[in-house]
Length: 330
Image (cartoon, rainbow, N blue to C red; front, side):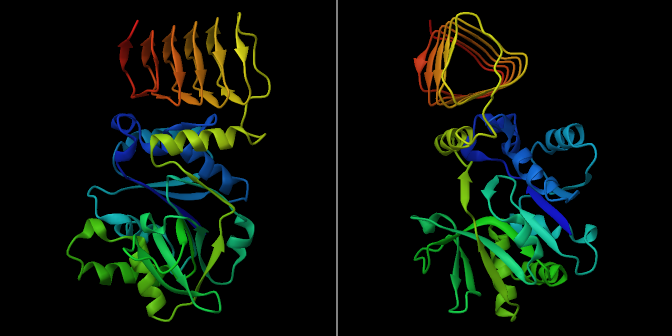
């Protein structure tokens, strides 16, 4: 089984950070979004991955090769934005005839029973009940629990079961053929989603079931990213347990502080993630994510997302600052 991870998107809702950093590499609770995804499969014994890269794709390739040198990784470039359906189709030549595939969107962090999904005798789509289904792909089910149809961002949703961006497909050859045939009749290729292809498969008579995501963490924009960071830090396995001594500094747990940081005369936490070798002096920070190699002096920050290599001095604000930025509000 191949794990296909499309990571070619531009991440427009997380700008300015995604001007210089792909969304899957945004730090979160001491890891990156992409690491959460890969680690889940490594823990279940899967080492074959196909990454569909595009925007800032070299950064993703370099990250994967450096951090995961032992996995079997294939990188395929999606040079044009032609929808998620097209992104998956590009993996066709790297998948054996009708080999099972598991597709996970590169900004999707979910808690679910991976083992039972992998063992399923039929294709499955991950779902989660939501209050605002109009913003997502939506699954409508038959009385027997099989999928009746899938609709991407319906104007009038007939279900509150949102698609979480995880698909286990047994009939990969049918999926690739369906995408290829559908593409001939699609006017706006950028709007051709994987949702459309799987819905076509259902209409062809292929039985596809669902599995429930226990938790689904939204990494799409600043506010929900910070909320996800806090939720994950409150899980024991993600927060830093052994924190080195920092001069005249109070740490309010939970926090994640990477190696090589210099912190003094500050109050850090709760719900703060700090990247490696950041420098923080005379500051108060809570409910925030601070990128690696950033320097913060005399600041009071809350609900802030600070990119890598940023310099901030003398602010009492809620900020959204990209990489390589220098701000002096003293």
